[in-house]
Length: 164
Image (cartoon, rainbow, N blue to C red; front, side):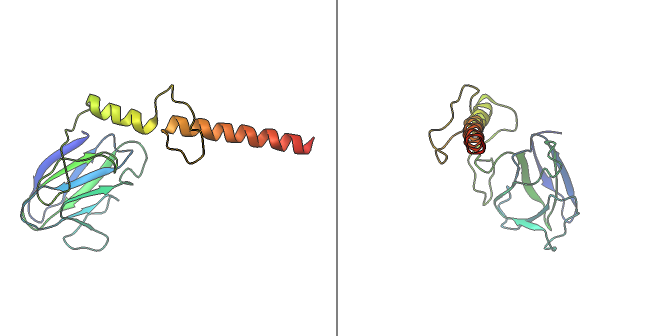
């Protein structure tokens, strides 16, 4: 298993790709120049070309809930009527992904790079991050959780004074 896999689909044959580190979702990139779609499912059901509940991918599509078990692993099933180059890559909707074909993409590698780790720290917030000054100010996850803890402490103190 990997965080990224690139390959070429065999016509009318389902490919199953398992990726790790998929808690923030999975990107599927159609790297083919033909203009045809790759049909995708992330719910364990076998896709068909043009089938019900199958998602067509002509460029790059993010599947935020591909990791249904919330264990960091996603299983993506793909099919196309012609040979199509593709990439399946773990990542959030804010990340850019590698691709060609009509894909909206910049560049990316599949491994854990320093840049990707810095991106994750930005999303989560540094351990020393302070709480934001207001409820609506931008913040990482750590700062947001600190803000929630502050608001709960204030609410409990207010409730205690009302009941006293």
